[in-house]
Image (cartoon, rainbow, N blue to C red):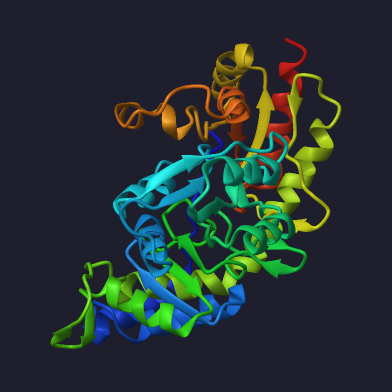
Length: 365
């Protein structure tokens, strides 16, 4: 079976893990600091705050932007549930706006409609889904016009770019995940990026029990710290990120060329001003055929995934909060059509050739 994901752990990761174990300083320390500085520099941000995972990164990023109980935060319903849950963690209310069916990201036109309708929006939490940047020109124009805090959920978009500028460096704060399926992995882990020194100081307090100094706690904080062990893996991963992104892009372009004339699917959109880093390679197929297509792939040795089979507000918990179906028609439609296939950098030429052959053969069935 050709797997949908395949984490890469090589010699450098093992070497740095051994260094940490030999140092006997397993919790936060110099490896965490090195990883923070290196990832922030790579992403074009001034400050990086390493922490426990992508979800805690989102939570802290929102708190750094002053989100408090009763505030309204606009976001996409087509994402992993942690995006909206992080808003609830702050006592704020998620306001869902629709997506562009070509890019799967927030549609700036729909976003402005939501900003006009709802009013008093404190923040917008965008998601660079599957490794593709949102339309940052349009969103930054709206930020200037409507004066909201902008948080980037970049958990799937390490190294993605809009007009040669990396995601995570556009907003007031950004969150990344280093979960075991991401383009950079530490097992579990995350980082918040910001260009504001005061926000950086506050974020560091939040992830470490609200500490100002070791024994003085001046704000409400959490134990969201990252370990040296996880950071050591991240340091080694970051050294290889560009090579691995290049392989993902190469695999994706091969698929796009092979599938461009197939009538039963649509390949991912790659806007000319973006570098899509393909955390996932996600195609669209008709809702009535999707289950049959997925079973066909599995039968022929190709794994796949659905990210995501439901918009967030149709999840049982969100229904209990009073959210109703029909809020975002495009997102609801897309959730019934998307299928992701293997695109990771471990794939061999034989693997991608087989994926192409299997999918092309589906049209002849």
